[in-house]
Image (cartoon, helix red, strand yellow):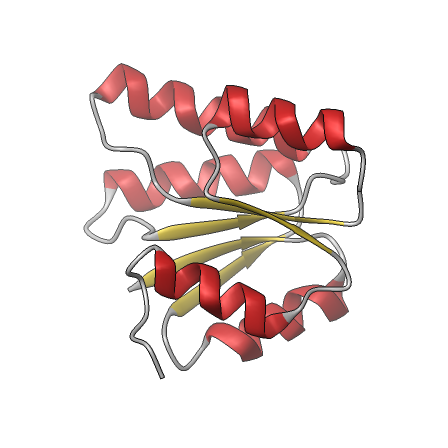
Length: 131
């Protein structure tokens, strides 16, 4: 199983990596363009990502734009939607609703992250086993 962590804060990226590395091979990116390029390379190779953890506040394009780009590629290629969990400090309910409506996200997790909730969401999605 592979997880793409899109996080521009090095400490947050490290925390997510440490929380997930028992369950996933993790790849971390820190901006919109690199994230989409990494996602595309994985699709074009033999190891697509099983889940994406996506920060909304990124340098350059926002995380919502990254989400839209990923969903466009999936639609164009006729692929199933990869589960996307938003990880953000943004608590604006309108942004959360937009993410759910436009991007069909699996979860919206507000920072500081509750790692138990993160793991519970991954269990609910069937991506990790119950403890």
